Image 1 (cartoon, helix red, strand yellow):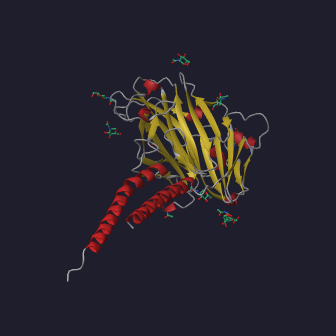
Image 2 (cartoon, rainbow, N blue to C red; image 1 turned 180 degrees about the horizontal axis):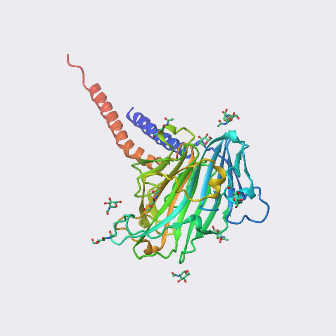
Image 3 (cartoon, rainbow, N blue to C red; image 1 turned 90 degrees about the horizontal axis):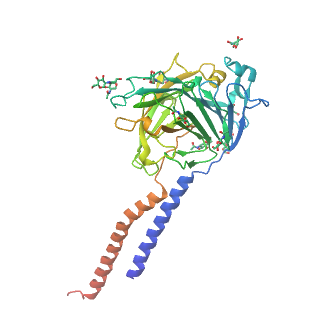
Length: 396
Ligand SMILES: *[C@@H]1O[C@H](CO)[C@@H](O)[C@H](O)[C@H]1NC(C)=O
Ligand SMILES: *[C@@H]1O[C@H](CO)[C@@H](O)[C@H](O)[C@H]1NC(C)=O
Ligand SMILES: *[C@@H]1O[C@H](CO)[C@@H](O)[C@H](O)[C@H]1NC(C)=O
Ligand SMILES: *[C@@H]1O[C@H](CO)[C@@H](O)[C@H](O)[C@H]1NC(C)=O
Ligand SMILES: *[C@@H]1O[C@H](CO)[C@@H](O)[C@H](O)[C@H]1NC(C)=O
Ligand SMILES: *[C@@H]1O[C@H](CO)[C@@H](O)[C@H](O)[C@H]1NC(C)=O
Ligand SMILES: *[C@@H]1O[C@H](CO)[C@@H](O)[C@H](O)[C@H]1NC(C)=O
Ligand SMILES: *[C@@H]1O[C@H](CO)[C@@H](O)[C@H](O)[C@H]1NC(C)=O
Ligand SMILES: *[C@@H]1O[C@H](CO)[C@@H](O)[C@H](O)[C@H]1NC(C)=O
Ligand SMILES: *[C@@H]1O[C@H](CO)[C@@H](O)[C@H](O)[C@H]1NC(C)=O
């Protein structure tokens, strides 16, 4: 009798393990929602590339919606994401007007009534300061900023659904600033640190500063971003904490830039990042450096010039934020002359790390083993008691 019972407990325990791991796997794969991606460089423009920079259009078509990702280097580098409720919406560019850079409506998403919402992120300025006292306080000793709208940008280097954009300021002694955009057709996780989780409704932008000769040996850098939207731009930062740092060791926080609270709906836009930058092109935990970000503030009159924003929005609303790289005590830029940082721009629910199957199995084993021992112990005691009870004759 006893062996049968303990076998039962063991089967129950194995079944529990299986259940946990299969469930976590289905959580991980999501509903395996897929978008159909198509990439077009300078849509609707015949052969010669436009003077002043490329315009990339990635269409990500769902069952009955479309995400239009537009990435442009005319002016400050800009990524615009337009979500429509139709799988046949299109992007129309009036090139002569677009190239005049002063006409709103020269880039349209048609039909206009299908637009659910749009958000853009503009990389406006690179700031450098001399951190003489190693306080990592950007208010001291700022050098003249580098305006990204004045950079010379190389043609986009496309590969699949990703695009690499590199540029430099005329005043850069050496080195370059690069942005790599990747659009995804399904859920997944980047192989490189910070190993951000993405969905089919988000794109990833990695920014890096490589080989720039700093203007002081103790220089640190800041990157200024602007979020542009129609009626409800991304205007507040939400910090989410986690007890799990499995994918980005030592980083327990995710920050996201969202629309105002009373305007957050299921389909609103988001910008998401982890507060970490890396000092090497092949990032490792040891070369990670914390980032800090300022609170978003309205940028009336301080908007960076972006041909894409001018062409798409009639009345853009802009919020700006600084991301500063490194904290007091961390190595200065000069040591490795490299800095990278990664963000996601998307719509809908921002991706959120969950415990991986491995961690869940470890938890199941950790919690399950004592439980199984308890159950087995209980069974043994029960069986013994019964056995011993039957050994004694009732006392009359
Ligand atoms: C969108 O697709 C889903 C699933 O195919 C369907 O249930 C829904 O009714 C569709 N919505 C519209 C507006 O067509
Ligand atoms: C745009 O700039 C061109 C010259 O580059 C000028 O002729 C035109 O009037 C401007 N349009 C508007 C709407 O400002
Ligand atoms: C969405 O689709 C419906 C029907 O195709 C349309 O009437 C509506 O105006 C569209 N736009 C929005 C923002 O819902
Ligand atoms: C650095 O520290 C020195 C001495 O404490 C101080 O005089 C100086 O103002 C500080 N510089 C900055 C930029 O904070
Ligand atoms: C950094 O600058 C702010 C003012 O902008 C000041 O309040 C703060 O004390 C400074 N922190 C340090 C460590 O110097
Ligand atoms: C484009 O990028 C690939 C790797 O991403 C690189 O090997 C290639 O040299 C780049 N081409 C140009 C023209 O920069
Ligand atoms: C700029 O880069 C080149 C090649 O990488 C190097 O030879 C040169 O010394 C660098 N110049 C400065 C000022 O660092
Ligand atoms: C949303 O909240 C902002 C302040 O956070 C307020 O100014 C605005 O009027 C609110 N809008 C609505 C529709 O409640
Ligand atoms: C970023 O920092 C610089 C220098 O401190 C400041 O001039 C600028 O206004 C800041 N931008 C935002 C959006 O806070
Ligand atoms: C992505 O968008 C599709 C279509 O709107 C939706 O069905 C799906 O739930 C979204 N996924 C996430 C993770 O937001």
